[in-house]
Image (tube, rainbow, N blue to C red; front, side):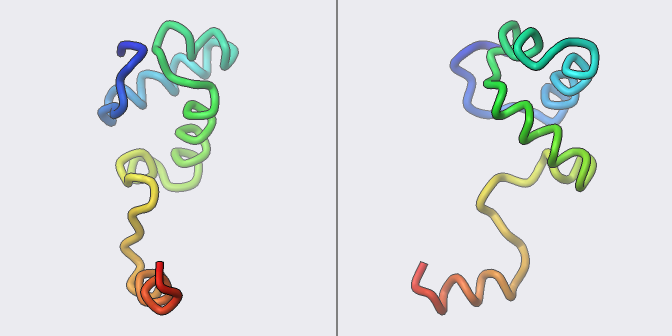
Length: 75
């Protein structure tokens, strides 16, 4: 993973989470080129939803009720 990478594969995210288990967040983030905030988000998503939480892009909700409310609010 390089420092300017914008998207990461599921395998790369899982690799980063494995490193996070072994190292402190700062030590895990530097060699991977991933911000500490991103690592924390991946960890939280993985803990809540498993691998599916790592594959869903932020802001993309499949919930039809959410989409309906979003349209209703003009967003």
